Image (cartoon, rainbow, N blue to C red; front, side, top):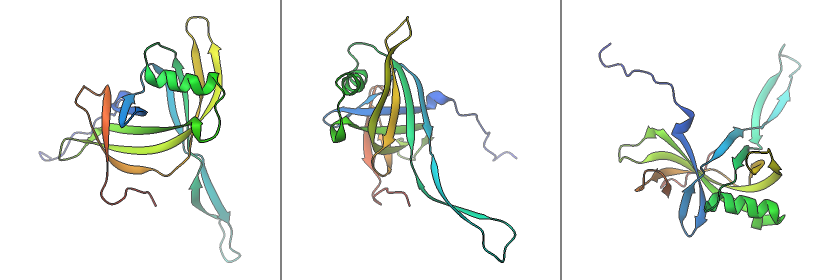
Length: 171
């Protein structure tokens, strides 16, 4: 019993997201009131004539991250998402690169587990509420997950992402 590690509940604040804003800088996505991922898995279901139950396999995903934020000035992440929404930007110009960092998954070298992916910004609304200018929408996956690690030298205001040497693609 002495060697057992105590289980700990992971707080939501231990999973941070960062958007590529300038060069190779990933800036923390702060002042978001919602950043919730839905996997929307695609299934292949069938029942064989010699079996009493149906079988299902996951054959793909249509991952989306619902977002909502209170618009703040001098915030590059808010500025980029607001620009895409306000100017009705389309196509690849409406894509962003996001790194998600699990602060609770620390590697031996002191970095944290991270995943990078390109998302298409699908704006939903802006201006909702009377207390703050609120933007909402969905970030829809527009590429594969790239696994890696993240490190920060400024208390996680920004981060650097390093891709795993294995290429990092999920199967």
